[in-house]
Length: 342
Image (tube, rainbow, N blue to C red; front, top):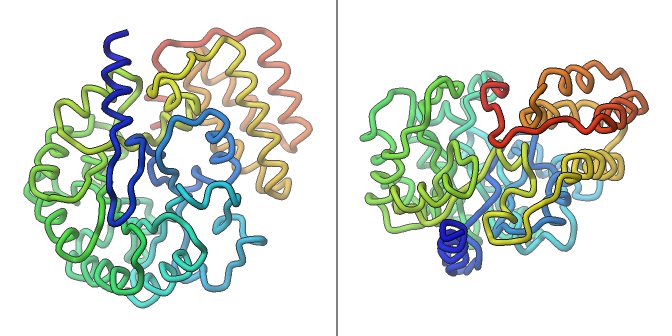
């Protein structure tokens, strides 16, 4: 238990980002299609985090989206104070306009996504594609910085070549351009998790800047989280896909009561109910199947769970499959099978 108490102590130290202080250094990492309003509400029930990042929103679409009607650019009133909205785009003016709307909405901060390597995003010269044109990336950061005073985050990867000098240089330039904090995932953009992240690159990035750096990549449990903090000297840890697989994980890392065996069923059913509250049936079905891909990794027979959910033609069938699966008390694994995510 020494590991957990040491971890809790480290995570609970206040951290200043821009002009604002947070009291927990563990955050939900910026992700695509996963950090939506229903999932964030699920996480709120467990707690244990300092900040939540929204799913990725198009900067061009934000001016035309209303919080009450958008499935992406939306939030609960109670989360305004710890929600960072993640945006992507290629044009400085559009990114600055979106950031100003985010600030005017009373949200904690804005995050610029320079890390998404999905082809549809990169073809728009956005996400990780901007790491190939760093001057344009810096123009975006500078434009957003001029537009807002709220905390400005940048999420980025190693680059397109496996060379630590690249992210070190990018980090310095992001700081000079006005970023208040960085979230760094130490994999090259083309790497679809086929190789482990280079945590030593996080250490080098942190040593190069004076602003907070959140490490990200392959943190499965409390021991991993503590090891990342100790070996990289990063200021905080951003939990991504493991927070999807185990939404209670961050609460456990912060010393809360460990979950009991019923939590797997309760979490699966609660999220379905929350999705039905926030989204139309078609969107619920699509998004729940995305969640199920990650959640499946908790079970010894992961493919059985995922196949049942993924083949469900409608919500009634999906709910019936969930009830049927959990009625047999499925065997869980200590460490989720990350290969299932590839």
